[in-house]
Amino acid sequence: MKILSIAVVAALVAACGAAVPPEELVDARDAYAKAQQGPAAKYVPADLHVAQEALATAENQFNSDAGSPDTVDDAYIALRKIQRAVALGIAAKADDDKAMAERDMGKTQSQMLNSDERKLREQREQIAHERDDLAKAQQETAAEHAARVEAEKKAADAMDALSKSLAVKKEDRGTVITLSGGVVFATGKADILPGAQTQLNQVADALKTQAEHHFLVGGHTDNQGNDSINDDLSTRRANAVRDYLIVHGVSANAITAQGFGSHQPVGDNHSPEGRAMNRRVEIIVDKGGG
Image (cartoon, rainbow, N blue to C red; front, side, top):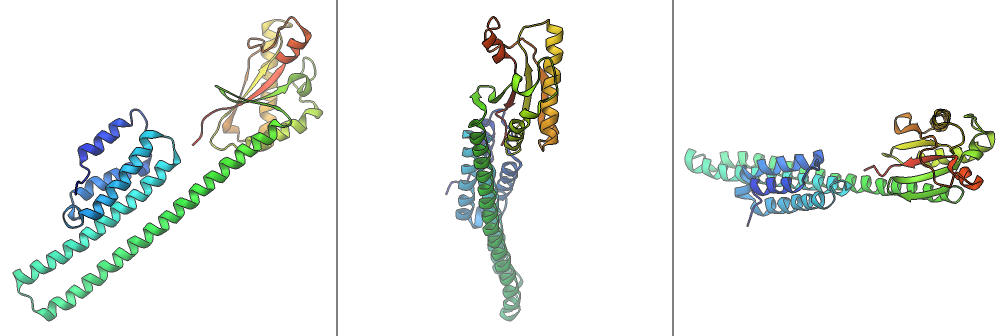
């Protein structure tokens, strides 16, 4: 039965390119490399092969999608199977050592019986403990995965609900939530109007479900007035929205603000309609996360 060599593991690592493997996968690789040098390779190669296949599954998952949470799950399971093979190898070697001791030291049958029964009992207890740990780890992994799936569904549902009342669009830069500047602010001001609070409350509730994402609040103006005035006004408006969202529960570490003045128009500044489109606040949810 073919056992995965250290060279093959190294090749799998190289195939990952610049992606950094999760700690669980690194631990599984190290544990397998050590297991190859221990009694498991000689005494329980079938169990070590099962562990190797589990590690290969984790490596394949990492190679195909380095950021997938399934890599962590598969690596954790592989580590447990490696540890089980190591325990079985130790038990088998203990049995072999016992037989050799009988031949070399000429112990009496009664002496060996007491010692062997104790060792066998201890080894069986150790194996049973390893099996229990493996089952518990699998249950915990399944529960963590289910929790992640539920959180992702909640985040998607929140954004879908928000899109029913506000302009929400997915772009290359992330999910863009657009608020009309005329609704949020009075002309030339950076104080949030009372009538805009309902919309901003909805935005805050949605952003709080977007774990592991970063948000950029961008302020924009039309081209009326000079750049100095517009840049300052857009920055103050972006900061006002950021502060409001933080007060309503969005993490301050997850949200930044920036004023773009009139430099990123989405409408024609030569028409009233186009200028109205350009007077806006955009909240961009990046594509990051787990």
